[in-house]
Image (cartoon, rainbow, N blue to C red; front, side, top):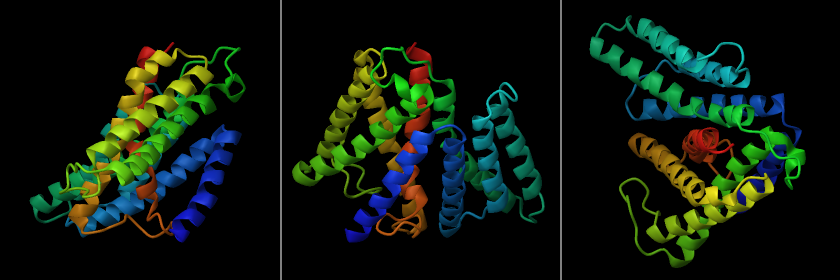
Length: 275
């Protein structure tokens, strides 16, 4: 617990500082987190019995993040980069004498790269989200920092609400074969906490808080699904944590797993339904 508290005391201010500065620093921070998460996920995949081309996969994930940081370079480039990545990894896998090994490497490498590259939606949300009304309480943040702040606090509020409610009232466990500690009560507590926080942030960003009725639960459930997805990989690898980089918290992937699923869900909702 002491290690967790010390790590949080260092990491949270750093993250908030990056968000406060904004601009290219957000892209750099996301790229660094993606690279470290890629190293960890490819290590887990190897432990689970899946050979990978980890260097190529990490490079592909970073290119996707860089594309998100410079969205005006080429329209539709995200899909194009994914397609090129599939081709390059396929070519590299042809050298395996057993086609079954080559297919396994091809699939595992593409999965690992695209999985961690979903963190790029944090950057995409900042670039593509709608502007803020001038009279909004947090209008001074600007749309990039404002919408990313909503995403960050939505995920943190889910984690906090689910942990506190689950610890005190949790009785009904679910998906125990993936994560034995998850409870329905914790899930509900997390959803409620996220919805309240999202409603508050929407108001502060000059938006209609009624969107929180849908966006809150969607962000919460996506965050939970992201956590369970990483737990599935760790279970398959026989690992308790993705790494040891952050004392008391495991690896970088353990810290960003919820964002991998929540970021694209929140981005899609905001771009499609909020003006």
